[in-house]
Image 1: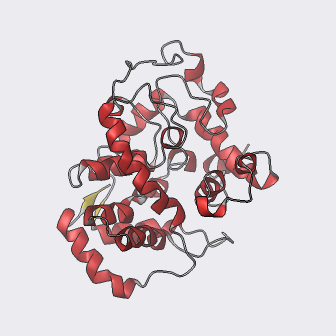
Image 2: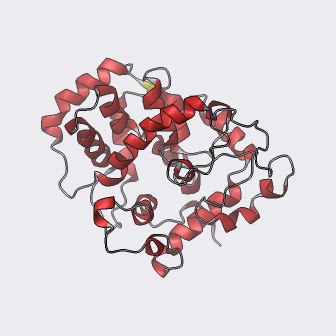
Length: 289
């Protein structure tokens, strides 16, 4: 396998999000499709997604997560206004992707506008705008499997509810007695605040925003890719009562992320004054990355 394939197993970073829609389709569109059809991971079209998860599950170890946290949570790579950050993020657009011509900013606007249309608080609208900002990790040289993908706890046994669980056989932690038991390095119902999650854009943007947004927003940011829990309920044994209560916000947010994509781009010229005021209300003039 070439180094290039190791860095970019997906044809586009958006392929992971398309895969989520196949696994968790919008309920209103699922009446004539069997449950088994949603998790068909053997179809040839899914080869790049399968390779993505092979790399993700092989390399997302407890030590790897600690290393990435130490590197990136210093936020010493770049400093810029949030609007420059969106421009930076839009460099991730893949012109070869035949399924969408929407850039990252347009997806974020669609998410936030859907939230706003339903009358939710302005901090939740802002959360929709910011939730994928952590994907700028790709532009700092991080491979896709360390930026996107379903997230899961490290430092304890991997649930068989995680997509492609067979690939964890190649993960060193699977064979380490310190990490391969049900609780691993954690205690029963210790609370997710004490649990290290696999590294990616969720964890990164959570730490970037934790001083600026309410806790409900931070749960949305940190766990919006934690599908093994908020869709499969695989890690109840690590969650405490506070997590259970806060995950109501994660469940509320998830459909806006998955199902708000439409082919018509938002009218940024008309929306710009509202979002400039909203960002200024909650965030400083510049953000550190």
